[in-house]
Image (cartoon, rainbow, N blue to C red; front, side, top):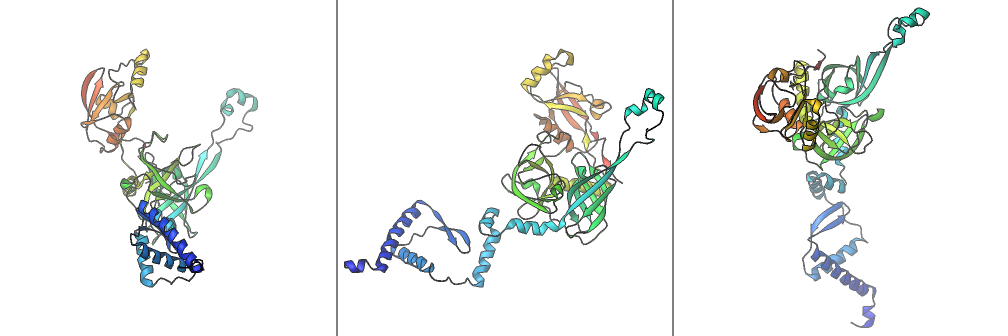
Length: 438
């Protein structure tokens, strides 16, 4: 090839392609796969191990494709691409341009409602009005005959469980409500009736007089893993049909960990934004299935939202629908997980009257009067070592075992009492503050 031939535009282009090809082949040899960017998205492809001659031909075809309009893919290719996208994970679908969050919201959003509640609260009359000295000087002038009343209003969210108008929300959304109004996505407003509340799990069920309503699809909260997608829908701060997204940050958060020790829930933690007004709304997976009931946030924190697992909420809702209440097993004890530091602190307090001979287990620090624990012979200072032959190391274990026991069924307990092993049988009673509306 003479000098003039080497300097032609075509030959310069071939030289550039050969140099580029050498770099590509060296890079591909180091990486097992490459990302292929096309007009249809990003795909992962195996490295081309063909000969340089074939690779050069491919490179030339690629270059020509930059200057000539590519052929429109046929229907079969488009269908195949849609099938592949349907099988992709959430992240792959995002990269490929298929917005699975929007699809999940479109599927479930019509079944998410706003719940407005109102309750009448009596204001206490200031004590000065009852003071005889005050009345001696002023008589009844300016003294109200009856305490003043005010109406407190709140807003939350909920979701439709069945087409006949059964709606799940949080108990704290409708607590003490005299009036409940349910607003649907299409703008309809219906009067709601609270048919049951369960304060221990913060689940409530509302019924509206309607039929053929859109409903949610329930997922399986027992199979959740941290890192999975999470989508929240609700009405935070009065902003209807707000959608936020994030991931499942953790599962099995105890009520003590999220600072609501009176609840019996192993919470789902998510960083999907949850704000006042989201309470009672659904937490969804990437398929649009409900996996939790949004419930709580921790103040002065970001990305710390909590939801009741849907498997537990569904079981509670079923009992509320069938009988208007939930019978939780109850012992009537105050307890703490025992540690070396706590054991030393208790033993150093001479006024406690308690001397612990162990620093593992769960120590009983209080017993309610006339409770099942008192009637069974449990004592302050007893350290629970095992329940039903299951070793107990944390207070949350005791709560879970009691919660999983039917009211009236016996629990075999092994205790360390002042260094002596004591065996007792305790029969839980029904938790005394269940709320029903029937």
